[in-house]
Amino acid sequence: MTNPTFEFTRAITRRPARSIADGLRANDMGNPDLASMLAAHATYVAALKSTGAEVIELDPLDDFPDAQFVEDTALCLPQGAILMRPGAPSRMGEVAEMAPTLRGMYTQVREISGPGFVEGGDILVTPKEILVGRSARTDAAGVAELTQIAADWGHAVREVFTPEGVLHFKTDCSLMDGETILATKRLASSGCFDGYRVLHTAEGEEAAANAIRFNSLVLMAAGFPKTAAMLDQAGYEVVEIDNTDCAKLDGGMSCLSLRF
Ligand code: CIR
Image (cartoon, rainbow, N blue to C red):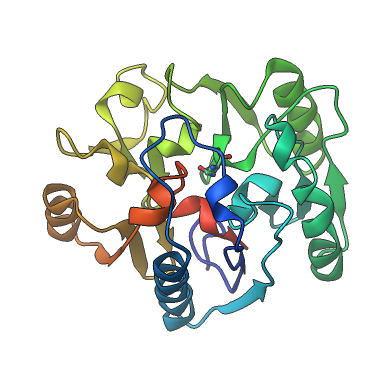
């Protein structure tokens, strides 16, 4: 029996473009370096493939400097894919670029048609529900439209709230297995994970929360030794990936792939 929330046969990624210096960011920490971002991206893709999954690697899109963060363009569920409607105007066109790939893989592709907005980074799928965090990118109307589509496929959506000043809901949390969520204390203290087993990122290591469980592995950003050791002790096989350059664009492990 596989668990479709963390056991996957495929992933879609997109290589970073030459235009990455134009990518969105909340605070300017300097421009990312393309060569080192490409190197980290290749390590990320290799880790996904090492679990036996097929990785569809899409070409860079110079017109969309944030397009390597493919997660925000769609939600992939066992029954079909849902095309998102990003709240960041500069990212809206990324969805049409992703659509043909998903239409080639799924018989059922639905879309958030608006007027609301949802970005994939605000969606955490667990075995019992889909948590969608309202944020500066995901609004009430977007959550309502997503709730209807997901309900057609038998999924319950629960609206939650991304902490103020945090880009996406999953900036601060990730699924580790069917019952366990890795989360920052600032997010978990809202009570949104009551009923789950919650592992907290270490103090000062909040940026480690955007990890992914992908088959046997947990991919997490390198440089957060206390959180990595805690996950290791909890029995997870942790792979640390350099996230220095993506972090300059507020990106992390989950953003870099669509998994299904
Ligand atoms: C943005 O601001 O949209 C990008 N620079 C980062 C997107 C990260 N995506 C994600 O957390 N799912």
